[in-house]
Image 1 (cartoon, rainbow, N blue to C red):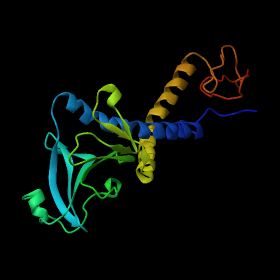
Image 2: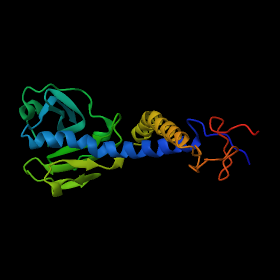
Image 3: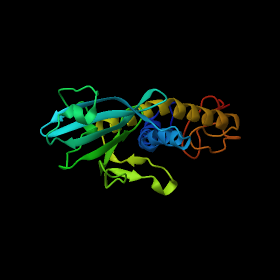
Image 4: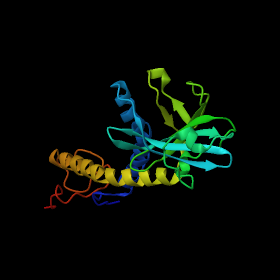
Length: 232
């Protein structure tokens, strides 16, 4: 069977690009945590960004994201929940602006457990958020009492946690985005490999030596017109 040389982008290259895209999409989840982690090592603690509060039933809820170097960190927010028992909410949160609705993104919303608590939500991924998780503690405690959807990095001396609950749309979008980024690289590698094989008089498909051979590759049947010599 006579075969033509492979195209620059074939089905195999597309499959390789998709697989690499999925792997890169998953890799950006922990990578999204490393940047604030390294800044913590440099003793640059983050500060809340534009905190607001709202009243939900008998709770006053303070919400803010985290900031570093004057920029909001996407996918990082916390809510402080205080039960109202007499005093007005502004006695709890001072001059912080109040809003009428819960301003938190969907991935950061965690149900209240009826006590005064702090809920820290983390989501990560690039370019879109692809995984999320929560951790919580009481207002009076410095220790986190529970984690949901987070893997702690305490073992390596970090205060951060890597989220693993999937945000499916973000995960799919990231996989397609990174697959698109990888396609030109896969095509370039394929082109370079074929060029090197041709310079060494080898089959561009399987690498079989074509020295002294004037017809198709005896191994896979590929005909490379740039190497094939006319029969005399």
